[in-house]
Amino acid sequence: MAIASSDAQKSGRSASRRKGSAFSEAPAWAAIGAGWQHLHGSFRDLGYSIEWHDFSTASDLRWEESFHPGAIEICLNLEGRGVVESPEARLELGPVMAGFYAQGASRLKGSRSGGARHRFITIELSQDFLAAHFRPDEKDLDPQLRKLLKRELDAGVSEPIRLASEHQQMVMSLRRPPVSVSAQRLWYHAKALEVAAAFFYKTEATAELFCQRQKRQNQERTHKVIALLSENLSEPLSLEEIGRRVGCSHFHLSRIFSQEMGKSIFQHLRELRMDRAAALLKEGKLNVTQVAMEVGYSSPSHFSTAFHEAFGCCPGLYPLATPVQRLAGARGAAENDK
Image 1 (cartoon, one colour):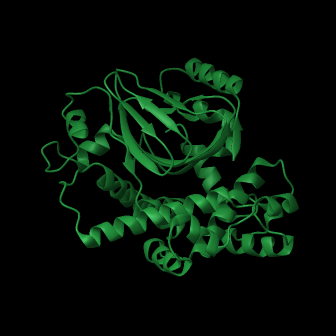
Image 2 (cartoon, rainbow, N blue to C red):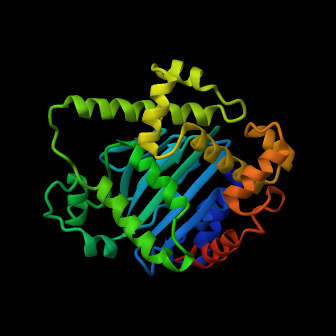
């Protein structure tokens, strides 16, 4: 996780203007360093770009500096608060929310709240990519997107959408693709379409059946568990305490969490701990023992074992010793300006 500086951000924007007319969002994220990670794609060459963000900022951050002109961007927001405003509407993204926004000649305004940690994924789609895969006359297409595709609207924002458990699993898979490096181009292209399909179409409202209500309640309880785990990494709550706060027995909660997430509460907690540990190690302000304590491990050796299983190297060498990290870093540097 990186901490943004407003002075550095302004300097990055000035540098971008001096470079010329070709747009690059890299200067907008220069201040947060490793807190912005290009996962895959090339906005210019492939029509899509997928990026992960994990940073804290002391003051409000001007988010609109990263928006590609002529693009529609989907944001899957896990943590932190962001706002995007068009001339006609306002999209507010809180924790575990999603939405999309489009920038044309009419510039959007966007900001990220200061004094907080932000964790989110963005999927940026070009007009050519959208035209190749979506038709304005398609049934159930989001009305806002329909207007954008028909060029009846120059810039716009969607309504906020609650991230369901399957959407959160989508975020996790985007960060850790289950395929070889050579297959990732095809895999990420399909995932970009999957995310778009999940958020670009409306479904007709129907009376909620008992089974639907039960599924919704299970998803809401799962979201609460994830929030409690994220908020208490250094001193994890017991299963009994989590069940008490969520409002059901911990036996039932463990069962529905596994059904919704495909993993146990403990396994998800471990993933959150490892993600947080990796961000702290990249930041470089704490040593390995301090990072272990920060994410709730009293034994550095147990922490090192868990970290090695998650990332393929010991925490003292992260991220330089990880082949995937080296490859991703080289690829990201080459494609940041595309």
